[in-house]
Image (tube, rainbow, N blue to C red; front, side, top):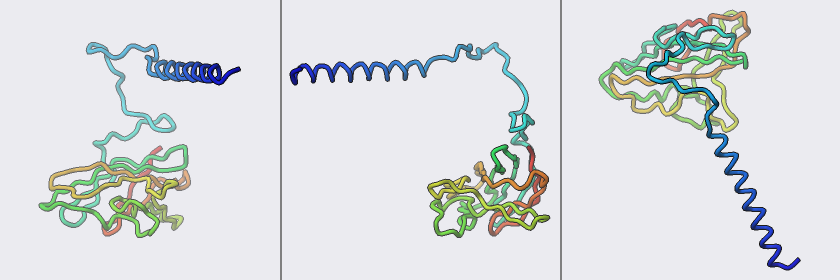
Length: 190
C-alpha cells in the first residue's frame, strides 16, 4: 500500500468517525416523544417533591429568621434531608438597611477555602449530641454553598443555600449558625 493510499484511507476513516459523532449528537438533541405543553394544556399541580416523595416546603414558608447588623435579615425556607447523607438549607438574605452590605464575616476561617465571599462559615449544631456540622466542600476546595455574596444593595434579596453532612435520622431540630449572627433553631424535613 502506498503512502497516498494510506492517507486516503485515514481520511475516509476520520470522516466516518466524524459523521458517527455528529449523528449521535443530533440524535441526543431530539424530542423524548412527549408533546410539549401548549397554552391550553393544564400543568401538573402540587409542591415539588423531595427524597422520600414528600412535598418540599414552598419558598414562602419560613422555618427561621435571623436579624443581623445594618438591617440584614436571613430568612430560611427549608432544611431538607437527602438520601445521599446531607442536609440542604435554603433561604434568602435581604438587605433592609440603607447601605450596601458585603457579609465577609460569614465565610470560613479555613485557609484552604477558595471562595472568599460565601456563607462557608455556616454550621448546624445538634445540641443533644453536642456535634457541629460544617458546610461540605468539593474536591477543589469550594464550599457547597452560595458564593459571590458581595455588595448586596438596600432592598435587594439574594437566594442562599448551604449543604451539610446529615445528622442521624432521629435528629430533626438543629441550630443554624452564621458567624456574627444570632443562632436560630430550625426543623429538618425529609
